[in-house]
Amino acid sequence: MNDTTPKPKLSQRAVEMPASPIRRLIPYALEAKKRGTKVYHLNIGQPDIPTPEPFFEALQKFPHKVVGYQLSQGSLEYISALAGYYRRCGYDVNADNILVTTGGSEAIVFAMQSIAATGDEIIVFEPFYTNYLGYAVMSGVKLVPVTSAAETGFHLPPREDIEAKITPRTRAIMVCSPNNPTGTVLRRDEMQTLAEIVTEKNLFLISDEVYREFVYEGEHTGVLDMPEIAQRAVVLDSISKRYSACGARIGCLVTKNEELMSAFLRFGQARLCSPSVDQFAATALTNLGEEYFAEVREEYRARRDVVMEALDDADGVFCRRPNGAFYVMARLPIDSSEKFAKYMLTDFNLDGETTMVAPGDGFYATPGKGLDEIRIACVLNTKDLKRAMHVLIEGVKEYRKTM
Image (cartoon, rainbow, N blue to C red; front, side):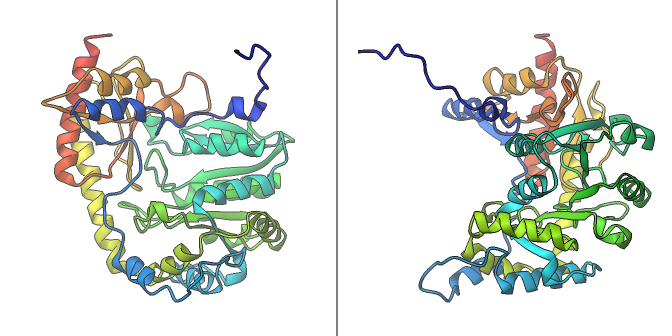
């Protein structure tokens, strides 16, 4: 007998939780593959560069016969190694300033939940890493977007535009440099402007610096480069992209604010600990120096240049060359990036090949923004990337015939 009684309702949080624009089209990609179509994945920041050997060598040497809990703040060995890494970056950081998290994702959640109460606001610059939206819903936080423009290379808008969004409920400004999804590297003067604003308005400055090593022109400026805001600064970090170890799920938070670090630790105690084995293996990665990063950086630079060459030669496409990370945010002559991304998986192939991209609207909080933009992740080797970009541009031409 069918149950005709009303179903229990989901929470408002569950209703509002957004689907990932990076992953929500995966069912269409799986169907394309079932049909025998090769799909070039340009939608997700999963590098194909091998995870460094020291990680696997460390795994084989794991000394314990029981995979037990670690300290909630992270293993002492790994935290000490991380502090050494940050000091080599030129930052005055010690072990007391670091808490290990389960990926950069947990670092973002801990920061939001420690800084902002339910209904409080955090200012972000759009387009931004799409999962910020999901973490904000999980935390009961309202993201307040300040739009940056493709024409300026997605650099910060004027100071007055930022300050106009500050309200009595604003608790922090969040920034990502080098940026996902745009590849923009903020200049020192831009970071200094943010430092002045958070000081004057009594806010925190949360800085997502996962792509710190991947700067191709200019230099990286982080919140730790500005000691005058040490008590307001929070660094979000991760090994995922730095060492091509996305599945290891090891990130961290860095702050000199003792009260804030105490809150991070209590959140950490509630979830017990981050993965013990992965922390042990990640410790070995912190010994990798500039020689490793120089090689990886040049590979990503070459990939960026492949993507930009294809976009520069395409009719109706607008994109300024990004200076960091391994993403490109491109404006296409299309009516809907969502429809186009789906079309590439359901209706188009070139000699049995197609591409999967991330629709641009998912990287904005303002309705109607990003409808003609896509994010391209430069995560394939240059040979495959050249082919993928050729397929993509041909797909744009064919899609335009359906508009």
